[in-house]
Length: 226
Image 1 (cartoon, helix red, strand yellow):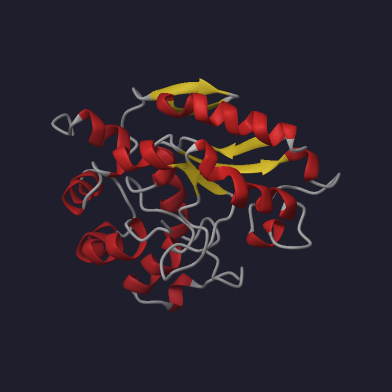
Image 2: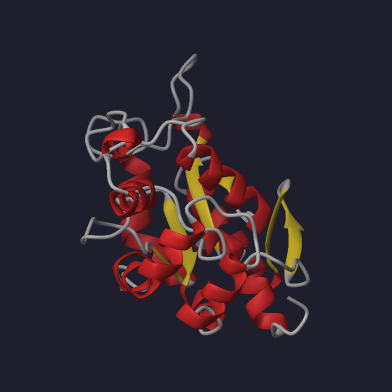
């Protein structure tokens, strides 16, 4: 993979040269100032702004994917119920996993521009963070944070690429993205690059993925809430 451009290597999770350390995670160095400003504004609004997940490299994403594809980790449907992959066609298995888990090489968490966020002071004592939509809906512990993010994210250059379900990735109200920096990374992620990256690694269901890749790219990777 040495002939991949630096940007493509970064965008596909194979290089960490674009990252900087921030609050015990790694983020794209270009978003530090805006992220700090967002965090400070959230603090002023009464939220202890925390990052549950930031950069995730290719190999970590591949482990998640392979464990799900091989039945070692649960795959859930839109009702949060386990899916029996053995009952599905190879193509349907890929779609089932991609509802909540990106292809290795195609996760926006590779960019370092995308973060899963919550407010630790809003989580009831003894309750574990789930990162499930109900937590951010009315009556959930992060409902007020959700409303605040909706009003203020754009002021700091962020948006929510999976704010609602639109036929691809399930709604993820906790997932925020730095619009300008993520767009720059996204320019390096296309079907041809992904085919090369996935084809060169031990990715479960590789052959099925490669056959489906143009459709998967359109339905899940390029399909975001602008």
